Length: 515
Ligand code: XMP
Image (cartoon, rainbow, N blue to C red; front, side, top):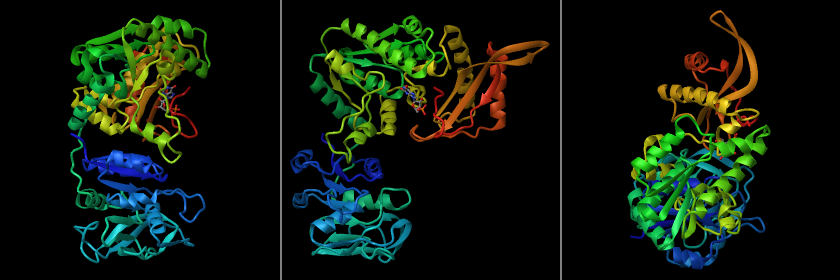
């Protein structure tokens, strides 16, 4: 089965990803390509409809991005959003003008036609829409008619009278346009005639077939970290190619309490991977880190060591032609959007450089999925919730949460403290609300008193942040009671820590990790 699909041509709007998400939420597969995606490729892709996104440029500027005019002659319905609408106007002979005032924010729009794009709305109904533009449409191209207006935009939406070409000045993809999803749904189903046949089980079926075809009889190797992405890749490849998958899980000695056991239990016993390879390289990593205090130096050593260990294991496996990676859609779009198709695709932290070095071809079965889709896929494949909803954990692990030199003893202290933080955050029902919650071990000793005795021990800092993507983050306003419980439990049960502080800085100016 081939899914019905909608193609989104990207002109650089910050909302382009949202358009794709909304349409996928409707059960229709959608993909973003740069604005200059060749017409031949569009035909090959075979979309039911094309959406031209918004963008930061003005269509009146020299060198502003344009699409090939011939896309309007393919007989495929087109919807232009904001910049996309102005571009349609310009290309098909209408007039766009600079407007002195930028229209930004909520606006009231009046529906003038409720036949297709606004089907389900009443004539003259006023709806709230989100605007963000400065240029305006002065006159619509020949053959077009206005189907909605607002106070500042006499042409808030238009359509061609006979051909299926539509434009909206507002952004139906953002939540500030409360009925935006209905409008997109009208375009996708009523106008394009797409069918909602995109869901996780059809994805598994289709993708498994594709993987089998790509891989043939050769073997695939995967660096399994136990994080969400590599875990889902492992589960998917296990389903599609079974014994041709070799999943290598390297214990670098810098993992959290109980983590190696959990990963082994999940993949060996629960998912029953045929070739699950567990490598305990803790000692090697700790040896390499001895005496090192600089954070970037630690990262480099851990990265290099990882490649060394992984390569050593890979050499033992015969007929390996592919390396599987958990690259997600946002990474792919970040690199293909607006900047053009030639931009480089981000490589994964831990295995960067590996494919070239080992002469392997890449397979990235999640490269079309958003994070929440990856989670759904993982659940459908039978992965446990503890893995699916796990907080992000940095590749260098606890090594960058022990400030200064990393020792076995400090790792053990930190593991205990960190475990208490996780337990308490979970018990308070906050685990899925916060982005990350962990302890950091400081190289500072402070004086305390326990019973009748003076103590002189280490300080732990607790870091709990809320964030959408890790790029910016707010420190979490945990209740004093919860903070007190965490502090009491740590000081009372973790030998080596006698003081706990809470990190109340956001990112920026601080980072999430301390190193
Ligand atoms: P920062 O500390 O830069 O972290 O605010 C942002 C996010 O990235 C994670 N992080 C890393 N992940 N290797 C990784 O794989 C690293 O070296 C690394 N450093 C930070 C961090 O946990 C947070 O989610």
